[in-house]
Length: 334
Ligand code: NAD
Ligand code: DAU
Image 1 (cartoon, rainbow, N blue to C red):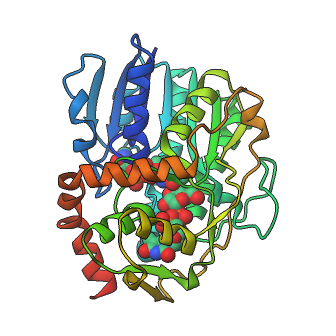
Image 2 (cartoon, rainbow, N blue to C red):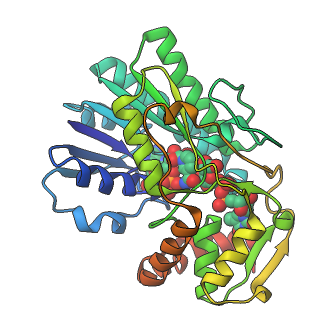
Image 3 (cartoon, protein in one colour):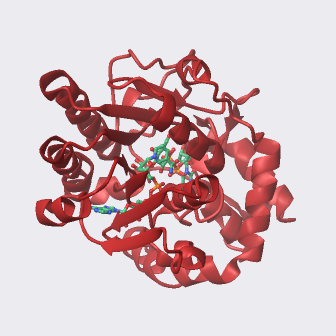
């Protein structure tokens, strides 16, 4: 099987490529990535000479490039996106271009070249936050940020392509991932690396918010399950369903403890994320019926992740002293 993975130089995409090449010795992977600030070929250094792997630099919104890379491909898994909620406040247009228009370009290629399967990697954020209970795949979408609204727009294109053109599509909607190669602008890698550098941890809006932390390999297994066993046209939620649920404040204290730092590093801030979503939780019974379950507990996953960042200082320091520093200075001015 030959897979086109888009956005494969990012956090989840690069983990997925490693996972696929390891699990399926006879699979080939083409990785189409624009190499935005979040795309990092260092994530894939160990496989760059693997004969089953090919990297192509390009934009999913570019019909010409997409038309070339889809040749001979059996399935597409689309990870490519602008993915950071905070950045979507400053530059919503780039989110619409990639997450909505780019998705449409890929779907057009599926139609034109008769690709057998297309899997859209989406997010629980399209449902909007919920006070209690669990979002189901059949729920109405109620996104809150330009990021999640763009992802919802992408999902709508995928669903419409099924109904109108009978395209062979699938959607996964996962909760917050964490693990190796996580770009250090998101809370877990930012806070771990800030602790390692004795820098402040900016806890937004009291830290009462809840996310359902899913170890990235559990998401890779989930996407693999849906790609191979999912019913075309269907959506599958993927979450860890942590019990008890973890607030950002509890998460921050765990990271401080695992890195041996004290709470004086915590800095409470407000106003950095207007429209801040309070809680996410998804019902995973559909994917569980396909035989998937999350295997890595938060306790185990967060320890592994802290260790990975401790052991890969060169990887994250290059980012934090480069693009991230520019972004931080521009928007946070301190
Ligand atoms: P990321 O920001 O780490 O990586 C995104 C990748 O896409 C980068 O390599 C980037 O260069 C590439 N890219 C961006 N625009 C592109 C374009 N126009 N053409 C080609 N490549 C482009 O993101 P991530 O955290 O790995 O997320 C991957 C996918 O999973 C996204 O679609 C995101 O919405 C979704 N998702 C992420 C999470 C999470 O917790 N990180 C949870 C649920 C869903
Ligand atoms: O739920 C899935 C989504 O998870 C994905 O679709 C997104 O691509 C991914 O970025 C992630 O979005 P979040 O906004 O939940 O992740 P982030 O790490 O940015 O923030 C998690 C929580 O931590 C949120 O409540 C805001 C808070 N936070 C975040 C940062 C960066 C802080 O308190 N301080 C921070 O510095």
